[in-house]
Image (tube, rainbow, N blue to C red; front, side, top):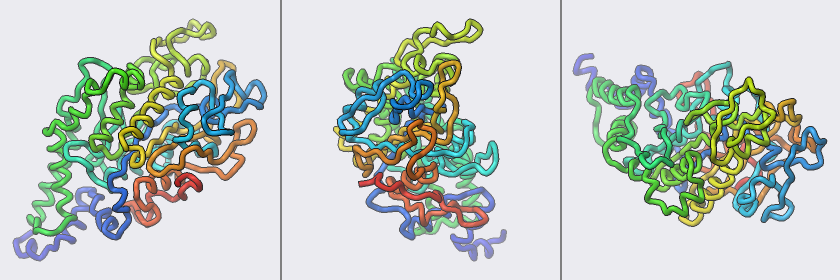
Length: 463
């Protein structure tokens, strides 16, 4: 390209060319943002997404069925809550005293019984068109990209310990827009984030992006916000690496012992506390893969699960003791702390309490959901299997109406008895809470206009 051609290249043309060359998708958004697709009053809003990986049982959480046949209703009884007429499982006594702060959607309905496809659907609001498709970005990636960084030095999108299971969170946007994953055990005395090194590919993608735009003609004329976003991506990476802000946010020892104990002095409770500190420090979207690791599925720090195909009633409460019925041919991994259900009860209620006391609940959306529900029929190993046709989801904060139950399942918990609300509707609702207009915001670079969420905001969810 000669100098005359460079001089004639407009900044818009450079960006359009850049989109084709580098797979850059953010500029396509910026024009839309200027057209008013993001509510300015909500630019400071955040989300903590507790992904209950493996699929939480709606029967053993927020939609008990005490009048169902024995082989369906399970072992536990419902308990009353501080919202008259609303009952949840007896194994979540702390949440029962805070139901006036949350909304539960009982008529959730998914489309896939596969962990992979169902997780992609639940975390992006878009059903994959083919198996193993990694195309559409997760909510966190879209929110982070569209709303930008709230605080220099704090990543906009954080995964604890990973942003997503069974999917690439950034999808076709590429690694430059992926989450910052914070692995490790926050309950350990030596836990720290050492410089939060970016994945090499992500850091080099950002540097390469700047170099290539610069090579198009050094079109960095003042006054154009669109091109400057490329520099901002690079500056964000450098600031995160060097400012020490995220390292400070990860200093859980700055919290009182009483607060830490309330969340649970274990890897899972402390991860939820870490999420609160990240949002308080300026993170836009934090996903916590919340599941205790133990039982039949092996030990590990990232792959805990709610996937209780066997011995569900033992496993949801504790992995500390091998159930007598577990065959000798099966490996049982012991974990001495609380199981998934009491851990969720402790950490979720502590999170809501902290957010409210710190004045953050009005601007922080809290979502707790898995990728599907569990089968009505209890199987021969006292577990429940994958079940996409019914489930439940809990939400709070950011304008969500507290003390409400939306929808219902039939008496056996097999299907919605009222209007079903699907992942596409949760997508529209999550974006609405964050101030993003899903009706007029489209994915960039697709052959035809495709909304970031094709569903509707859930009726009765917001005040």
